[in-house]
Amino acid sequence: MIYGIGTDMILITRLKAALERHGDRFAEKILGPDEMKRYLHRKSKVELRGLRYLATRFAAKEAFSKALGLGMRMPMTWRSMQLLNAASGKPEAFCSGKLKAHMEELGLKAQVSVTDEAEYALAFVVIEQMEEATETITD
Image (tube, rainbow, N blue to C red; front, side, top):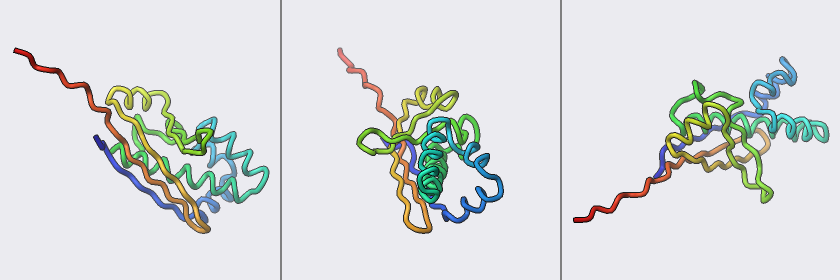
């Protein structure tokens, strides 16, 4: 059953300006440890690739928080949800700490899609609630 749906679109130049003002401290505020490694790797090869990676993760976290219905308040934090790619390239949401416990307690799992094009990054998230097995009533 669908628990919530969220979407977010960001102007990539907005993040570029934040990075120019604050450097990678800004990225460290948004990205979890595994995402940060990937961001730095991409940025070291081509700066624009790092910027687009950061933008898609920013949008995904905003969309995720909307689908969850919490916004950016506990247990949802920027770093408590990481968007990592499976070997196939499929983006997958990994939660940690109190957010992970919250998701497990409610039986929630997320499906995430991200894309970027020239000026914008976009994310779409569907959070599903796993249905509990129904009891069979017998006479």
